[in-house]
Image 1 (tube, rainbow, N blue to C red):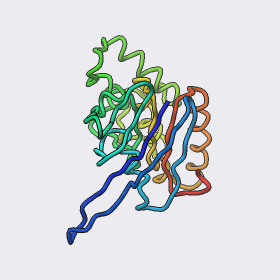
Image 2: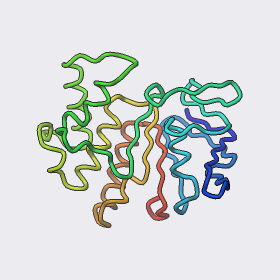
Image 3: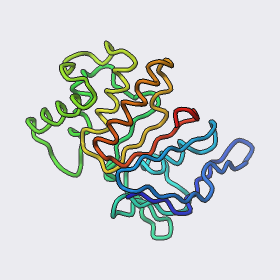
Length: 209
């Protein structure tokens, strides 16, 4: 379902020095499985995830999602993030405070380039996504009125609403308190198993992994 071959990403640091954030990674994830990338801050976990998403352009290597090569340095292939069929939940959630819960989740559908959704389709898909994360009935609430756990679920609904091939999670629980973090671990795993969505999960927390 997902494979990375000999992936490399180098950043230029001060003093003309190079930082090898990702240095020859090879991995594959079967369809419907969850892979955790575990390691300390600065080891390249998030950079790998951002390369998968298309938010960073690797220096070399190959990335395949499903049957599509989304990056291949040798062939000059680079598919933009919007065309990769991925959903992503950031550490900060990246929720838009000026939008309602409904509009936050609807946004990926409104800007989709692969197809145009009708108003009825958007309403139905947003409702389904919110029901999946137990936020049904919150559609018209301001996103700023949600608790930390609710904001995390809102970000997850937005990542799932367009039914992505792959879900990418970048330290999604790090901003929650310890009790809520443990609860959300089980909720995330249950949702992933129910949907059978291929998932890559980044964390520095060994117990969480």
